[in-house]
Image (cartoon, rainbow, N blue to C red; front, top):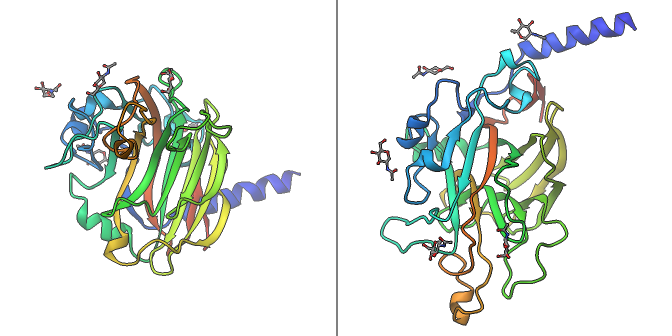
Length: 315
Ligand SMILES: *[C@@H]1O[C@H](CO)[C@@H](O)[C@H](O)[C@H]1NC(C)=O
Ligand SMILES: *[C@@H]1O[C@H](CO)[C@@H](O)[C@H](O)[C@H]1NC(C)=O
Ligand SMILES: *[C@@H]1O[C@H](CO)[C@@H](O)[C@H](O)[C@H]1NC(C)=O
Ligand SMILES: *[C@@H]1O[C@H](CO)[C@@H](O)[C@H](O)[C@H]1NC(C)=O
Ligand SMILES: *[C@@H]1O[C@H](CO)[C@@H](O)[C@H](O)[C@H]1NC(C)=O
């Protein structure tokens, strides 16, 4: 018993010293990042996809008021906190107006996009070459819940054609006409591939961090998924699987978003063609809703996958 305990200590010390694989982009908000930095897209987040208010109206850094995922922050020992939680919210003003295009009245959205001081184009090629792993941890904001009658697309990589290499989704998928909502698994996360096949689903329970890692092989066009809660090491939940409808090369690459993107319900008063135009038409209640994020980063898979606390799984 005593010997086993000592062995365990030695093993964990060894893993801690062999920390992680090359990090390509680090969106774990350092403790000195400020809400003013969010307004100017200074640091790791491009914050331009939002409504008419300043970025810090919708997104805030929570300082030391809430602990981030334990995986990269010394477990439950708050003195080892390395990053701040980021809250991302929408309200009825969250109507994005793309440059030179019409307002997206169908959606309510606040997107945070991976960048380095606003620069995101070069980063795309760095993050989306070879085999790379996209990490994100998500927690409910219990004061500002989502409305599970709607669909939410919350984490995705979006090439120029508007498709998603993979995505994490919540709620009731948009249908026209609207079906019986909320659907039975509306409160579960779904990890979907480019063709929208559900690869993994798990309930979005309250008060815990839900940790995800998605490996993308940009040449072989495959994906694999890991998941855990709070301080449990990430466990593989989807083996390497083909993502055949994804494109290779620049057409298949795009910005990495973590968001609250809320789709509408069909408005029966709209014309039939407008009823299918989810971007510009449909019903939104205009409520204030939010999600909490931490542990967002992208690593190369060259030296393995970080499972938490410096433990690496060779791939
Ligand atoms: C914030 O902290 C990080 C390390 O945690 C450091 O690299 C960076 O220079 C700091 N930024 C400012 C503006 O002090
Ligand atoms: C955004 O912030 C700037 C600088 O703090 C302020 O002058 C401006 O009024 C704000 N805009 C909105 C829409 O709140
Ligand atoms: C928490 O971490 C600090 C800094 O690493 C350390 O000094 C302290 O002993 C830890 N506390 C516990 C309860 O592990
Ligand atoms: C929400 O915003 C839309 C679009 O700007 C507007 O038509 C609607 O009246 C607003 N609803 C509420 C409840 O403020
Ligand atoms: C959620 O959305 C449905 C469909 O639009 C609506 O009937 C319901 O009132 C909404 N709930 C809240 C709390 O906003």
